[in-house]
Image (tube, rainbow, N blue to C red):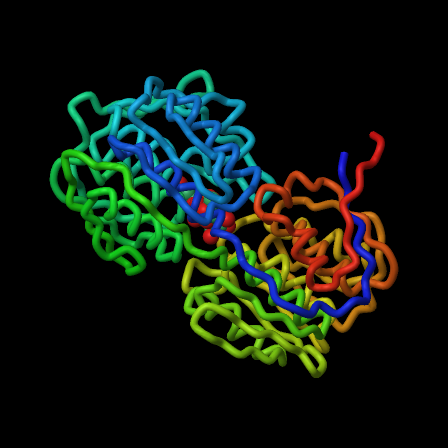
Length: 422
Ligand code: UD1
């Protein structure tokens, strides 16, 4: 079992490059299923979640060449199966995003039902409703969800009750090979949706309006493989920005798309952080004291729920009372207990609200990464805590941060990964 040891007190200084976006790459890899010829993907982050989705595709018969650094070649001509088993879907809910492309390409998909998860029940009703409107027959038995459309899917008008990222991706991919036009209203508008739509269009699909509140997909008969470079990870970049702010450091973050960072940049500026923007890099300094702010997580372009835990770590050392409202997930405050154990003063108000009094004097102790972004929050808190913070449950962090330790060390942080006897 590995643990992270962070000794607080060092300022982060220097330059760090953001990796490809985890949340873009997972549906894009799944989308490759739609192509009848091989695809090549670049800027692939080296993450456990990427290994998991590749495992699902390999199980389906896709041949994947990952021998090149940060690139993947996917040959989908050999797809032989339509089933994704429990072991693979259980370890990562996002595996469910193979259902749409598989259903469209093969006319049949049987995916293990994703279980509950650390940050709420996360149902898949919107995905299934969309598939049904496209003409698929859905059955559920023995823990599996099976979708069939032997005569192919048909375009439909679909309204999403909530702009779910996964449902938007799954339905958008299924509609690419449907007969006729699909209109998807109230879809997610996240940058990762736009990146996926761009990839699908390069593969011969006809998707218009991704990134707006209506997406129209004119079905095509065939799609082919394509080359694609994945967008930078706005959540990873944001995590380093907060690290720079909390340590009063001086950090340049390279490989960012500044327009994707607007909700975070606005809040960091409000807290007193100095930010200089260029087209693909952001310079963060923080000469003065951090001030309390309020955030409310929302679907994009609102403040991202995936930055909530890291932002809360920062709020613990801001002067005054900060507030957090989590509107996207029903149970995303597991980091509160851990931050309070480090000396923070956070009170939750129901399942979705938190009050943070600062500045607290954080002190290092043993904590756990309770989910991916909560793990990042522990690391950030450790960077400013007095003494040693020992972080366990690193498999969560490994899912979504490429070379976190190496990148933070290059910025001057005192952080190490050690093996501990169980
Ligand atoms: C994706 C991201 C995740 C991010 C989240 C919200 C990936 C791989 N993961 O997750 O990092 O935190 O978007 O920005 O891209 N919901 C339903 N029914 C459904 C689907 C969703 O009620 O059928 C609810 C969920 O329970 C949740 C909310 O909608 O409360 C948002 O979920 P969704 O946008 O689907 O998130 P994911 O795609 O799972």
